[in-house]
Image (tube, chains in turn brown, green):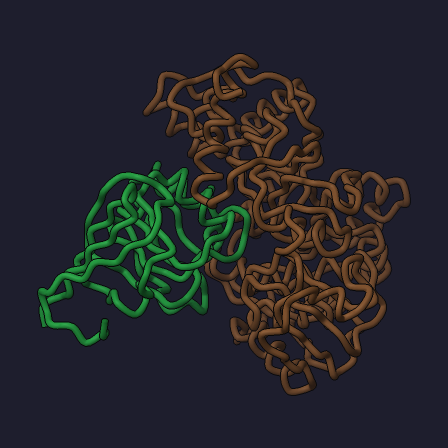
Length: 419
Length: 146
């Protein structure tokens, strides 16, 4: 591949992967046939940059010069490995509400046509595992999106590092990724023991525990034991997303729950825990206060749900809370196209939108940097979104249950508290 | 080597190449990990993470000295963008290797080194003049005048 015999694009892609592997200190690649990235998709800024600084700014130019960090523009072939596209920058149906321009929409639609032509599955979600891309245990993947990476490693037991835009685009063309980190057995064992001494059952509690653990272990590998219950994809989604935001958790073990943690001994393997940390009522209260430290004004003017993208049971629950009511302030609920199609069929989208709320796809407020005009205070049910959104768009945020957030949309007031 | 060194004295640290090339500049040091996407403004190189000790400070044209990367997989993309907007650090020195930082350093094109024989977070202070030789993995620190 390095000599260009397979093709120029593959040569440029493997050149980038070699530089990346050298930086890591990896001396070989693994083969991968499951790539999740954002291949060749660009913001208008990136497109215009290459329009000014290079001879071309079309899809192939952005893919070459930006994704592959190539010195020249090369022809980009069909994907060589199974590849899906993660979240994008705007909702193709509700882009005007998001404050996007027709130019941005047209640019996104043009990028999508290029992706479809190359066999990339345009899932447009941060939760590919809820939208049809579920690898098997032990499968080598090349995924980006920190909340999907932690789910892939921990819940499924497949193997991926937190890849980036450039490495996933290169993997799409080569089917290779550096053999480093989570691809290797010895890297996957636990480092810290977290003992949960207060009941963690609700989605909000799973999210708060994840946020606590990420802050404590940073990018290490926690092993969780104790009073954690009702494990399901939804709870893991919120736990992992939170842990990957407050820290850089890419894998966790829950003893008796996750596939590489049948026992405590299995989870730690040859390692001894570097620390044992308790999570009790005091720690729980402290996380809640941390997540609410951005909120002072009880007058909420925006509610955002669906971070990471809502599952169908979350949409059903929100529809039940909104049914027969009208909202006072905008409520945007984000999900994947795939899950929304089920919600449409079940009449849930109609129920939600009858209240004045919107069901959106493809993106979220943080990724799109899009909130309703004039927003000063947002209500959120996601620790991850609380971590990012106030910093990205400069607003206050409240954190609570989905019900607290829906109540805020119905009344315009924040009344959530820790129960 | 004690951290209490005489102003103007040169200290040499040795480690390994992450990205080649040579650059020098004023150090910006943080003991906190840096988040890429959502943690920095790629148009100005400013740290924006709400609870970060460097919030509001830009690393543009500095030699960035930090423990490592954290957060979103958009790390490489955010630092890649700082190169396009001319807001990238001149060089990077860090302790903890991750895929985020490895890829981010590669596409930022700034000389970068890691695995130094002494802890750069202890030896280097903000304002020191730092020369990074990425290919040789050598860092030369001139302490700021007192």
